[in-house]
Image 1: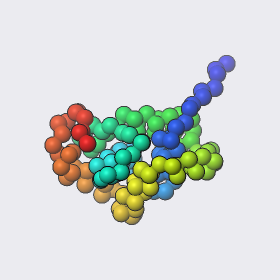
Image 2: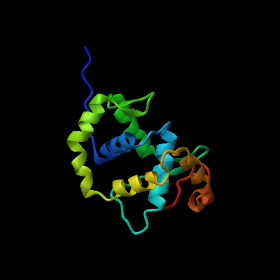
Image 3: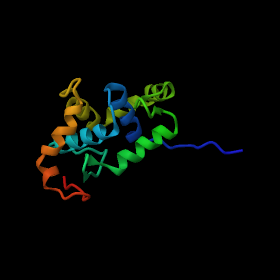
Length: 144
């Protein structure tokens, strides 16, 4: 008999659920690239949700985002194939969503994503033209 896995969810998890509920992401690469673009365009906003990004062939990559997405998938809060919250994920999100009102970065990311409307695929192209991304060496951390 195996023991059930228990997870501790953070604002990072709740924030990713919010993004997945709000926008139709086709793959996790777009989420990484969107969060990178949002972070570099945050200006004077000092987000407490901090991600480090590395330059990869597919764009910006964050080990933190990847880990949180894997947690959500393992705990069945996100359906891997559809990359959307499951019924349990939606229920969980609506129970804890009010916690995000104390953080400004999720709203900033929502505004950035809204700028792409139904063309989130453009995020994957635009990241390659950002000066900070272009300046970074492949496999290295992008200095933001």
